[in-house]
Amino acid sequence: MIVKTFGSAVQGVTAIPITIEVNVFPRGTKFFIVGLPDNAVKESEKRIESTIISLGYRFPRFRTVVNMAPAAIRKAGAAYDLPITLGIIAASGQMPADTLHTYTIMGELSLDGTIQPIKGALPIALQAREAGFSGLIVPLQNAREAAMVSGLKVYGVSHVREVIQFLHHPQSLAPVQADAREEFLAAQAGFDVDFSDVKGQYGVKRALEIAAAGGHNALMIGPPGSGKTMLAKRLSTILPPLTLNEALETTKIHSVAGKLPEHASLVTRRPFRAPHHTISDTALVGGGSVPQPGEISLAHNGVLFLDELPEFKRKVLEVMRQPLEERQITISRARTSVSYPASYILLAACNPCQCGFYGHPDRDCTCPPGQVQKYLNRISGPLLDRIDLHLQVTPVPFTALHAEEQAEPSRHIRERVLRAREIQTRRFEAENGIYCNAQMSSRQLKDICQLGREESTLLKNAMSKLKLSARAYDRILKVSRTIADLEGSAGIQVNHLAEAIQYRSLDRESWGS
Image 1 (cartoon, rainbow, N blue to C red):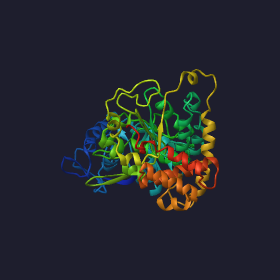
Image 2 (image 1 turned 120 degrees about the horizontal axis):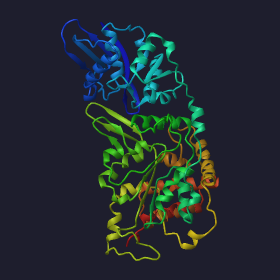
Image 3 (image 1 turned 120 degrees about the vertical axis):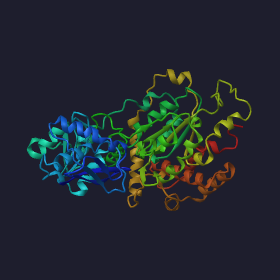
Image 4 (image 1 turned 90 degrees about the horizontal axis):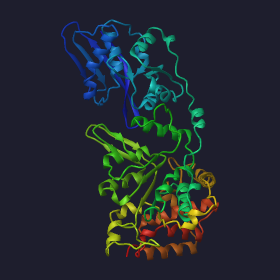
């Protein structure tokens, strides 16, 4: 008897329907799983056998063939345990199979039939709704996450016995209720950190406000203890709140990677990822034998903070160049190719030299001649070109640290950022996939960032003196446009352009000499 159940395979951040066919023959004794399963799927036989016996059913001793179609897609992980188990019980005539075909079913099994959580519940739910299934059966721990998808009945189960009872008596389980919009709005609470905690550093705060307003990448250079990490951790507090669509998109990535916090069903704040400088290129951009999203995708719609930038391996930094431009990363393997979104603000920090005190107002640099430039040369020119703002961070003097004056809180800065983003939203409303100034194409620059005669002369002189690249030219125009947006100016003025040029400090020939 042939019985069909249905599951899903997650590829990238989307899911593909998988048909699981089970046939129990009256002769022979071997158990086969075909359809390009990985080792975790092949090992499911022992988990399934133990589960079926613990439920009081009979594990068939005849030839049993499990086919997972389409066969060209690799099936990975233990999440297929539950649909295979139900298929075997039904195919051996121990339960009716009338309603199995109406549900997408996924879950990993323990030996006693307890159902363990899975990865990618949100994209699986989206695929089940798109395919027209009447419901989705997933582990209880994943039910609220999957229930974020409207128009689909989601049932959370903790044991195989509950699933079998539900298939016999549908009224025994109620669908999990979750309102994505309500939960999203309820989670828009305050942050644990605030810009008001940072004393002094007004110039750097201004630059980070520009970065947040236009989605620009930034690099902070300064001696140890000057506040670079403290400032970086507060950038998220002035970014615009996630929209519901952005929250769902971000949640899909974290769900596929298995990075959703326990009991969380939706990512409601912009991610802030800060990998250590010993990270591998695969962990940063994603990949592996079974491709998984890396840190740049986990930072999608948020901030990727790379502290001690020159200490990262050169190979690791270079693989970021293409994602910074394309805002997505494509991982190709012999049998498959997957793409993960990677639209984030890159915020990096580093010391100005090996000893850390080059340019310090009170301490002397002990590096030998040429060592300063050699240290910064660990960061390649092409990568620096893709960073819009180069910020020099100096130590905060005692008088500023000891002052009683309250610094400007994040909510005030965020209000200005939101006004600038509203201008950009109206500007790019007809453009697909472009939401802020940093994402403008070269064609759009010509239309949106037009300069007057005085502004053109200033930029020409800066390009000649600093020997800037064509990419740096584009970056200056984009930052100038953001500064103008923060002031509510219709056009780019000389002061906007001058401020943008000063943020290209690493392009100056005098740096490190």
